[in-house]
Figure (tube, rainbow, N blue to C red):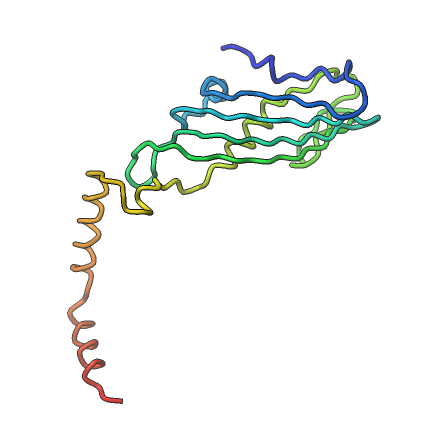
Length: 176
């Protein structure tokens, strides 16, 4: 499998101050991580890399679209994705990524691989429940959606216990 060399930043040669990097993310990026939830990917990631004397401050921003399947109908649709991630990189004795906001890398490091951070930022910016916009506005015409509605209506009719019906009649006949 092809390595993601373009996401390795050799910070030894960088001057102090801010540096900017842009990345175009496609489906091959996610294939590297064996993530198969997306059908198509068109994302842009911007990185502001600020080098200071003894640490780095990284600001990631992503925007674009991914094609996913609806959780209700399994119909594919394009989902707008926007993500942000702020990360501080410090030097220490050994690698430590226990903290979500601070990364410690060994003092003898000369480059930083940011691919994992980009991957996590994008995946975490996807909503837990993915619903086709056509369901919400009523424009989606899907066989699966019709069957789901048919079963829901049928369950609602069958789920009413006749004893509750009698109680409702008594309550509606009651005068206040």
